[in-house]
Length: 400
Ligand code: FAD
Ligand code: UDP
Image 1: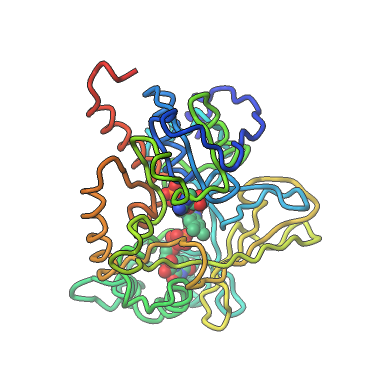
Image 2: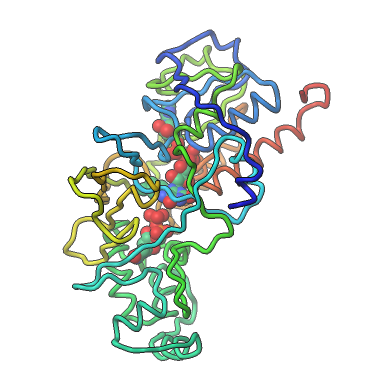
């Protein structure tokens, strides 16, 4: 964090530079049309405009930039994340160096508690979790390893999200922390999901209670939206907000398109819709300074409709006499937030990917364009890699 802060450039406060909805300068004025102003679209717009001298039109059907990482002040003036808690964490120096051009950072290590009966226990499961749950006083990693080994139920071939957990910690801990949460979150049993889903959450034998262990964990000091404003504030970038890409007449599109919306939508769901999981966010402001001990409390119990509650002031460090929280209630309908990792969905995606590979002048990117359960840093890394490949393919004379 210190290194990134030392590298920071002075960010001048910039007012939102939001293009008029429906902006159409005539496609020929643009070299690239980008569908989506989230991380994938914004990074590629910035790179193509700033580093490659291209004129870029970014189109988003929402009335704001930032995609799902969008944050804003609510009626009480508290900075909230409209689409749920976004915590930045990465092991990539390249991604940190790149984003640090557009923001300074506030160090933040995310902590999560799981509500189990009357107890709130550290998640991921660690020594403290086990001691509290079982009334033990294990003091060393070795003791915890032995305890977990006794609980674990080895699975011959670890394939599913259930296998990963049962194999590591056994059925009781799986049922307590994972089964109900995962069924709510995905509308599927963990045995129907790829192992990668629950493998995101480790088990620890020490008392480290951080949710992530990445080398860089911090939040953009002035929020994500301000960071996106700084990325997109370029004379060669225009924004058209509140505009659906598919409503642009074909002749209005630039010679190159970067598409970060759902890949199946681009192809008119030709092979049937790719499944996505959605969420309903219930935002509330309370007349109290603090609501919960940590940024997020998870609710694995099946009889509670939400999966987690976030209190944003923990994430942002904002000081305010009130506090704002959000409940996440999973849903099948609504905006596509999560690609659902399971073999049949990946097989369907591959069919769309084959169409994408054959589609001239279009590059698919981002969480929805790639149908991958990517974190923010992975999307930034992917976008930087796409830009590098584009530069490598350009004739030398065209690289500015
Ligand atoms: P998006 O942010 O989804 O942007 C795509 C944009 O394209 C959207 O703005 C959409 O409106 C626009 N679009 C789509 N179709 C069209 C169209 N036809 N015309 C015009 N515009 C269109 N990652 C982390 O690293 N840490 C976290 O803590 C974290 N928490 C998360 C919590 C939740 C609830 C969710 C849903 C995701 C979370 N993520 C987190 C993941 C993170 O949101 C994504 O990795 C990242 O925002 C993806 O960026 P993107 O540009 O690929 O997609
Ligand atoms: N998970 C769970 N219980 C928890 C936390 C996570 O069962 O308390 C499972 C659940 O299936 C979830 C997945 O692990 O979707 C990944 O968790 P993560 O916190 O990474 O989810 P995200 O922040 O991406 O929604």
